[in-house]
Length: 229
Length: 41
Image (cartoon, rainbow over all chains, first blue to last red; front, side, top):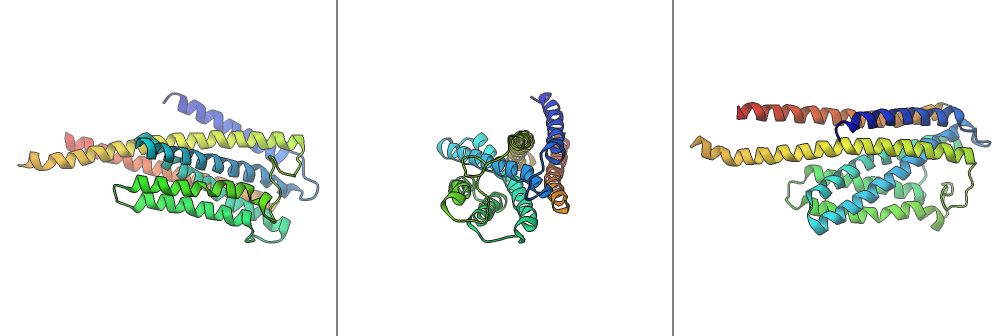
């Protein structure tokens, strides 16, 4: 597995470069918005990747609650952390797209507000994991993750249920998209998925290493008083 | 065009910052492991 990591990293870097070229150069220019519409190729794949990571977090949290598996707990924390990074990208690129198109940076409409709430829920999840010293922290975090995941369908379906400023969804919505734009969008999503997988892989190894070190340190501290006698 | 470049730059600044945090955590962990190894002799 360790040998595969640099190869995967190199392939991801090539794919990300190609996706960037497709988004900035090869994709057709949208007629009404012009070049600023190209933010779409980073904004939408980041949102889809966020949904996927938080869904994996939900599955891992449920798995942890059922089995108390340390592996499941590690996957949960990793996907929450990387998901927050991608959600931050969504929340930053969104207003940068909205300003030239809508004339405003932000509006408290359901799609935007529910996305901000989703981000805040997972920030609180990470803060709980970081600062709580209770032995029950993984259980509490898993429960919080289940409630947090309830916001994912609300974010996605909000533009169908409520009247919002946000455009219709690309998949299953009323909006139509040029086939060339679809192609560029999917390449960018694939590139960001590979990138997310790469970060999750590194972060998972780091988490396992951290846990092993903590276990060893705990054992050492238990053995120390005996050896000093 | 400025908004487009700002969005793309912001995306990569966020990702690279997170990667830098991971690298820093990894280095700190490595030094803790080294210290533990030394203390064991």
